[in-house]
Every structure is written in structure tokens, then in C-alpha cells.
Length: 145
DNA sequence: GAAAGTAAAAAAT
DNA sequence: ATTTTTTACTTTC
Image 1 (tube, rainbow, N blue to C red):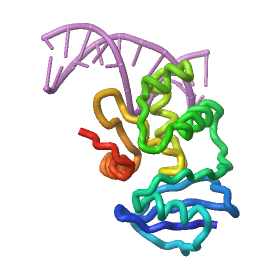
Image 2 (spheres, rainbow, N blue to C red):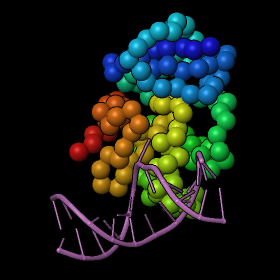
Image 3 (cartoon, rainbow, N blue to C red):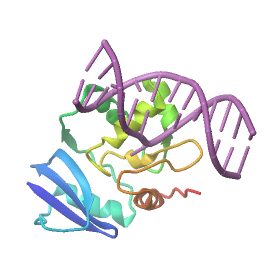
């Protein structure tokens, strides 16, 4: 089913099956799905209120292996911290661009914190707009120039 | 296989 | 400090 969650910048939708997140989550401005409370939405609410939240959710994705690997690594970035494309690349023995590519294909916004990955000297990019990315980071107490 | 694409980095100016 | 070139990967055809 589709769950939606209204936040400041629009609505965040995500497909869920029970407590498991499936396929994708994305931002949109056109709310047209029903909202149903569940464990995850509670956590998200707290998160957007500015609390430190560990989502601890499972994903059922169907992604290329490399992408999965990158996303898994990104999941380990703790709240309030950021990593850089270069760092991740080094750890995974790949190139920064490949990381960016994988993240760009990240189907699950916010839950997989691709917003915590920035470029070396600036904020980097974000599929739903850097404004959202910056806002997310500010939530976590990180200020980007 | 080959080509295109990339949310980067390094080098040159 | 900004623009330009080079890079190294994945994806997709």
C-alpha cells in the first residue's frame, strides 16, 4: 500500500508492506493517497520534528548489486553526520561518480539518508532539489555554507 | 560490447 | 575563486 506523510516541503510518499518499505519513497506536491499511521510514520514524524531517530526499517528493493552496496553503506552514516562521495568511494573501492550515480538512483528518500552524503566542498546534489537536502541537514543540526 | 551519463575531483586559468 | 578538463565508475542499449 502507499503511505503518505505531509511535511513542510510537500508530501513524502512511500510504499509499505506491513512494516517493510517496498520499492520507493519520494517527494511530491500532489497528495492523492490515503495516509495511514504505522510504526514508521511515527518515527518519521519524530524525525521531522527534529529528534534523532533510528528508522530501523527493512527494505525490499530490487536494485543492481552495486547500488545496494552503496545504499547499505550510506545507511550506516549516523544521525547528524555527513560523509563525502570521495570517502564512500574509498571505502567501497570505487569512484565518487559511481557513488553519486548510485545515490541518485536511490529510490527511498530520507529513509536511506542519501542527503547525508555531500561533496567535498559544497553540498552536492539532490534529486528532489538541494533546498530539501539542505533543510534535511539542518534538521540534523548541520549547517551547509 | 560499446556508448552515455554522472549529486566528482583535479588542474589550469 | 572560478572555469575547464579529466576521470572512473555504472547503467542501458
